[in-house]
Length: 108
Length: 122
Image (cartoon, rainbow over all chains, first blue to last red; front, top):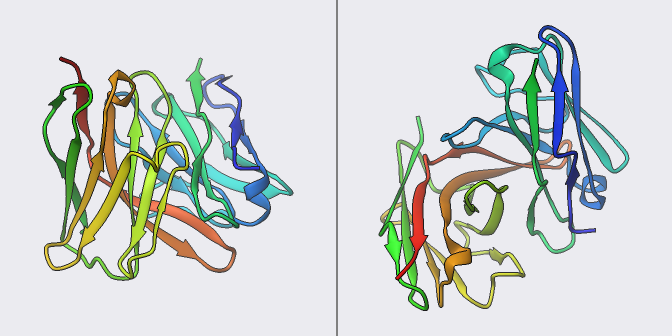
């Protein structure tokens, strides 16, 4: 499949744990990367590969993959984590770059 | 550190050609993939296409009949042209640097420009 599917909206209580998922056939070939986007800003890479975080990304962000589903977990969500989150992968046969439709995370 | 800066007209007339440039500063072009991504107002991210410094180019199948991407390694500039634009091409356009990690196999974009807004309107 050449699509990545995300739930459009997810909410979490302040300080609780939330998981955002991304499903697609390309994830059996390429691991997902995850991006956080706040209003008016460019996307920011938060997780890639087998749970790798770029410098400066808090360790409350983590990633995992099982079969064709990738997950981004935020453990102890903070108010500043409220944002849109996008998964991204690459189609192993066509090499096209794919994005999920995005998940809007609300921190209550 | 590496910075990307998009530039180009903010307003394009319908049926005309949209042309954007992304200038890379503070780092090398070599060894990376360079992408154009766009985001229509209130919608998600869409990869238009990407190119490696070896000249390997891949386009989004839904756009490839109207799109051209090129990389000038001497100027460290990535270019985008979209022909026959319509209102549906109105979006924020981003350039981004991509890498492929091998173990495990992962494609990720670790550096993004701030984006430039392009409006298609007469």
